[in-house]
Image 1 (cartoon, helix red, strand yellow):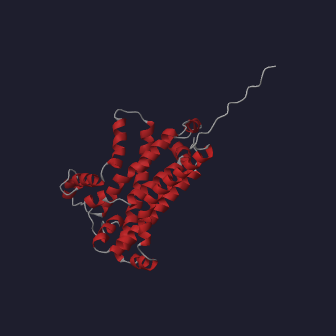
Image 2 (cartoon, one colour):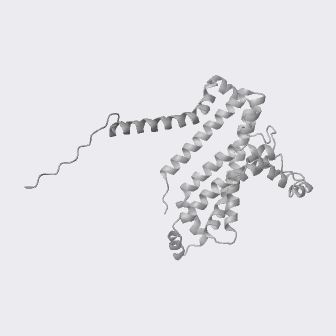
Image 3 (tube, one colour):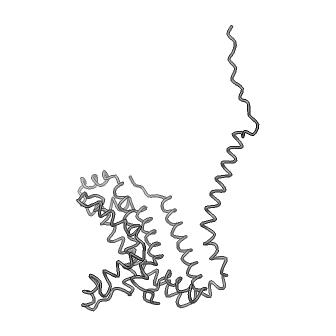
Length: 283
């Protein structure tokens, strides 16, 4: 009768770790890594809140310069977002569904403001639209000033923030199942009606997410604005520019506006994540 084969006995050498200990060390290392990165990102933001008090925050919030910067930022950001949505949505749809020479160049130009230094973006806008700019000199001849006006703030915000929405919309339209559109077209719907009643509703969640990010980017714009629009209180001094002024003349005002921007930014990011998690029906 054959002898049963016995499994080899694995002898643990002194100093070797068991599987349980190795797993524990892995969890501990991951926890330390996560905690370190989280603290590195959170502590500077938390320092703003520890540096002030509720009384001081509310007192600074009533500062006319703070109120002016807040309303100017919100107003210009809403206008910029509206323009981006109205122009960027049909542009992204047509661009995503078309193949033409130079499309790669167009894609690159769309993404360029994302990597372009803000100061360079502002300087480029000034060279184009300034009083002696390539186009600005003709506007100036007609009595129209663009640089160092509220309009310049809006132009700067659109330039730096529009890629966030256009890239998102373009990606959504490229991934959308066109069979829905073909079905609507066979039932007699026009291309415009198909877009408005089929494509747009089914991509609305992603478009809304891109719109929220665009609004946040426009609200926080600094470099291009100060180069192209200047820092005129009540005219071009947005919240980021008011923070810059506060560092030199009124620390409490700068601190209050910084906290406001942190709160708004946090709400924006939470909104984007909730919209993304909720999702919308799409192909």
